[in-house]
Structures are given as C-alpha cells and as structure tokens.
Image (cartoon, rainbow, N blue to C red; front, top):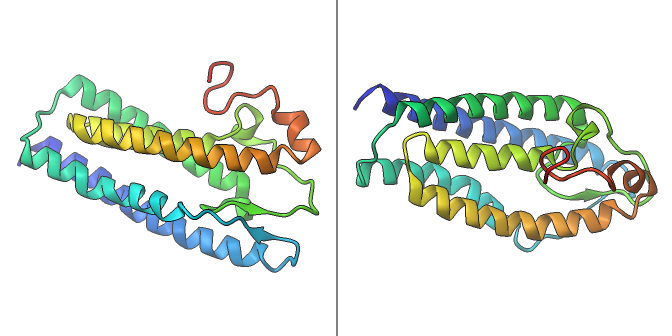
Length: 192
C-alpha cells in the first residue's frame, strides 16, 4: 500500500464520520422543527435509495481501487483533493447558514414564508446538492475509480432529478422563495 492509498482511505473515513454526524444533526433538527404542529416531513418513498447511494461509495470505491488495482495520477489526485477540501468547507458553510433548517429529509411548513437567502443561498438554490456531486466525484476519481464515478454519478443524477422536482414544487409555492430564487441557478451561479 502506498501513500495515495492512505490518503483515499483517510478521505473515506473522514466522509463516513461526517455523514454519521450529519445524520445525527438532521435527526436533532427534525425533532426541533416538528415541535411546530404545522411542520410535516414530506413522504419520499425513494429516500432509502439516497441512504444506499451515500453508503455505497464506502464499498464501491475501495473495492474498485483494490480489485482493479487502480493507479494514482498525482495531477488528478491533487485536483480531486483540492475540490474535496473546497466541498467540505462549503458543507460547513451550508450547515452554519441553515442552522436548525438543515436536514436530509424534505421538511415543509406551509404556514411559514421564512426562507434562507444568506451564505451560499444568496447565489444558488441547492448548494448542498453541489457538495454531494463534488464529494462523489472527487472520492471516486482521486484514485481513478472510473466505474464507481460513472455509476454513482448517474445514480445521483437520477435521484437529484426526482428530489429537486419535488422539493422545488413545494418551495416555489412560497412567494418569498419564488422572488429570491426564480432567477438563481441550481448548482453554479449563472451557469447551471
């Protein structure tokens, strides 16, 4: 095992610990939000597929690296590492911005018109989904796990397409959300 293996294993362990902490934070936030009788968790029968997607990276990437003896290319690995660090900082920024509003589930309060328009939400609609895209990409490509990258990216694209349609249908019912976000892109300001 060489240095690049230690780095990718460390990144995967860091991500796993972060995911567990985020799930705990999400459950705490959900309890806080559900104290309001108007708040409801939107039913998503496919939610388990998100959990499976986010869990599978910890199996698929190491398996592909070991089984196919994937090579490490320093330039690609370096770019992936930098983007991964950026995504991690962006995730902390999102969590700090949303505070108790952050969650892994869709939570809707039809009686409230309050929205978050600060932090990264000043520029794009879905910075958290951007972080997921960046994490899945960088963790797969860091050690050239191309099959994992393609499979996880397609799976994530399908899941995000379904989730965003449902989420935005709810969010755009809020006139304040519509005013602030109707001209904002989903992931990258002015582009996509």
